[in-house]
Amino acid sequence: MSAERRRPLIAANWKMNLLKADAAEYCRDLRRGLAAATATGEVDARVVIFPSFPLIPVVARELVDSEVEVGGQDLHPEERGAHTGDVSASQLADAGCTWVLCGHSERRQNHGESDEWVGLKVAAAARHRQLSPLICVGETRAERQEGRTFEVLARQLLAALAGGPGPFALAYEPVWAIGTGETATPEIAQEAHRFLRQRITEELGEVTAAAVPILYGGSVTPDNAASLIAQPDIDGFLVGGASLDPQKFLAIIRCSG
Ligand code: 13P
Image (cartoon, rainbow, N blue to C red; front, side):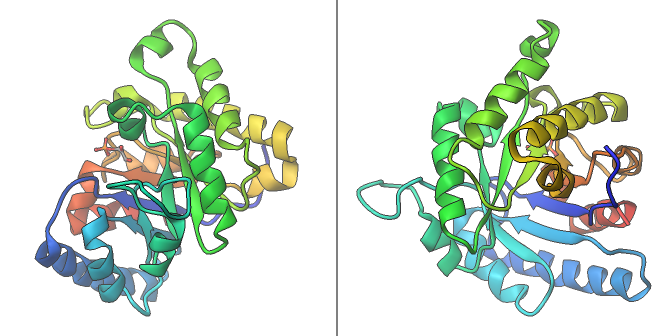
């Protein structure tokens, strides 16, 4: 699809890592590195950090008055109530978040989250206008080998959009590439991204589809980021392991221009 270049969106998913002191030091390094890269015009990207819940206040404080945004790694579809261990959209927003991950494969696999449940989370985030959902989809290795990749992506995408989201971003994260060191080739990733954008076009129209950032996630490193972001439908990254080192994360941001 031809579209004006979308501004790159580069996100760090810290998963269940780091302690308060590490997080504060990381944010200071990131601010310094980004300020230098932005001043030279090297970088014009939107950057988001997804820390685990206890670190959100530290990250929000260290990144205050910077362009870097903060997001939660998950949320509960309801606003309040007896849901031990869960957090609501308003709690995330109150803590300074502007993003929330919905449907990460580690939530789908480790916590049995269904496509419908992910859709409820997306709708909850969308109701809370300050929060944008970053919806994660991706096939397992077995699903790819069985030739079911597009079927799985379409099913996950449509269920996530069932509640009629407001502005959202999408992350294509093939499960077989997460934490394995086996990155999707730029061609494989582009094929999935183009498919997802076509499905969004069918559901929500061309204008929306042309504006939605579609990020790639799965063993992204400073070495493979440039060839991936060169693909027309890859608009940024959701980075796990490599995002834990601020210098590696900065290098990935710099590749993205
Ligand atoms: P890795 O970059 O460690 O493969 O993790 C990807 C991911 O799951 C980001 O959400």
